[in-house]
Amino acid sequence: MRLGYSVETVRAAEGELMARLPEGALMQRAAAGLAAAAAGLLGRVYGARVVLLVGSGDNGGDALYAGARLVRRGAGVSAVLITPGRAHTAGLAALLRAGGRVADDPYEVLAAADLVLDGITGIGGHGGLRPDAVPLARAAHGSGAVVLAVDLPSGVEADTGEVGGEAVRADATVTFGAYKTGLLIDPAREYAGAVRLVDIGLGPHLPSVPELEALQHADVAHLLPVPAAESDKYRRGVVGVVAGSARYPGAAVLAVAGALRGGAGAVRYVGPGSDAVIARFPEALVHGWPPSKAGRVQAWVVGPGLGDSPGVDEVLDSDVPVLVDADGLRGLDPAVVRARSAPTLLTPHAGEAAALLGVAREEVEGTRLASVRALAAKYGATVLLKGSTTLVADPDPRRAVRVNPTGTSWLATAGSGDVLSGLTGSLLAAGLAPLDAGSVGAYLHGLAARLVSRDAPVSAHDVATALPQAWRDTTTP
Ligand SMILES: NC(=O)C1=CN([C@@H]2O[C@H](COP(=O)(O)OP(=O)(O)OC[C@H]3O[C@@H](n4cnc5c(N)ncnc54)[C@H](O)[C@@H]3O)[C@@H](O)[C@H]2O)[C@@H](O)CC1
Ligand SMILES: [K+]
Image (cartoon, rainbow, N blue to C red):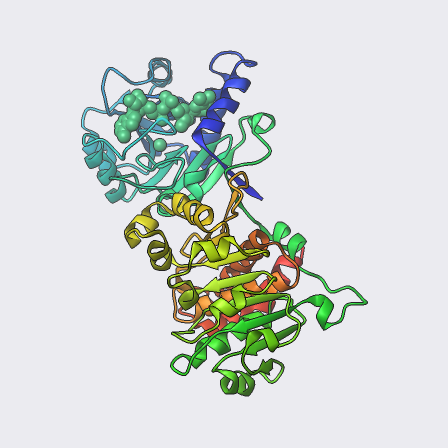
């Protein structure tokens, strides 16, 4: 599990640790890790041209001390002081002592740089880059140099992943002690490039529950249902799918395609797409209306391609877990969801989430963490907010939000959400809790898309077909 923490949590842990260490020791650990990462990116340090963008806080101090280490290994290091006279005093002295210099013309050194260390702001920064730093950040980006962000790309919000104004676009980020939540959530995640964590000894001082968790292969493997020797199809779980319409029969087929690969022992289908479903998947069990007469079901999926067809009320009336997606989310009444005796999992994309919250789509896209939490609170349900970094929030606000690390932008393709809802509903039927079903579903779905895409366009059908391979990949050590 990759864990993300808030600034407040990181500061508290740093405070505890700092009290036990000689002054400046933590910053030296950070600078050593930063210099090692910089050297790794450069390949050859001797003779390399390195520019430090130095803000007024300790983030700039990290950059200055790392710069001093790189000078000692033969690099030419120039510091650009964003607010001259306010740079970290001891760090600047260390750089100058080692043989580094302060740049006379920032744009000249940036144009010739091999590597730029962005130490403008770290966890103390707020509200995007200030105007004086903006042209320097742009020059760094346009220079052809590798840009390495110190702790965070300057200008992004560490706690939320929001990017309010201009921010540094980094090729890579070295973060200290713990991942800051913003590094794992778009849009900030995109600004960070490849993120590397440098251990500065914070671990024992961090709380056991983080703000954010990203599953990794081993976590998913641990959560996936495995049929026991005595399992039959009912014990493995039966998932019911109410999806598709005369207009969108394909949504029914794709949701069933996902459901057949999610670990449930059988898939029941109820709705207007029966003929299309049975033609494509003879193993599906199709039933007439209503869903309550379809026989035993351990979880329902309702909504993909449903149009105005009925089904949502009927399924929400059941006493088993229900996943509501797409058309099923339109006008969904929070009171109905809150009154249910079994868990509910909602899987909106940003536009659907915006409609449920009564805000603009851009607001959800810019404030993904706050939005998913707000929806989970409003509906008393688990919410999976789809996007390039899909988030899953439990209705219990004390639980960490899960962020999916396996996404790919190729997944933004018609029908891929239908596959995800079928797959995730199948995991619910197999007995996973909604937070686990949602995050495991998103993980396998993203991984399947990556496996088949290999940087080319994919169809939703391709993704469904690759799910067994994704499953196998996560369970193969
Ligand atoms: N606290 C610790 O124990 C450690 C901190 N470390 C470093 O220290 C950083 C935090 O240092 P600070 O608390 O000094 O804060 P920062 O260096 O992140 O930024 C604060 C400074 O930036 C200015 N500032 C705020 N917003 C700005 C904006 N939008 N544009 C330009 N300037 C802005 C503030 O006026 C303040 O002077 C971490 O991110 C990390 O890099 C590391 O050395 C590891 C140890
Ligand atoms: K930074």
